Amino acid sequence: MADTATKAFTPKDVYISSLKGYLEELNAGVTSYVEHAHNNWSGGVVEPGYGAAVDSGARVWWCYDVAPSVNFSFEEQWETLGRLAARTRQSPVVPGLSLDGLAPSFLTNPTGQLEHTKQMVR
Image 1: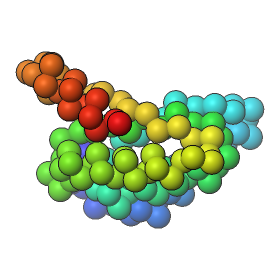
Image 2: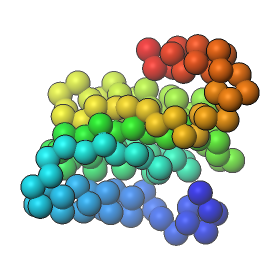
Image 3: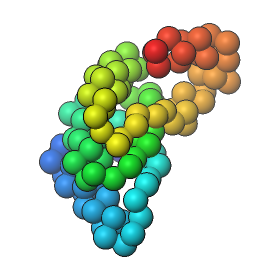
């Protein structure tokens, strides 16, 4: 994400804007979502985005985009996703995975990236 945007949006901004979107759609009658979560520039904004999905009460398949980031390594992103997944036992939110950010790794090392992804998802 552009440096300008990452500085402009605080964790609270991510939470409020995400929750607003879920609540507007629930009000319109939509009850289930696939969230292609791009709030992946730091751990501080991942959790509020996910929390908004949980707090909305909607059924959400929250598919996080593990993607290259200067300030948020792949390892940190996987750890964050694991923490979030562990919190969802009693929630209608189901963690998922978007493969956009991992696509270059799959192209250069498909077997290795697939095995790594399998290990991280477990």
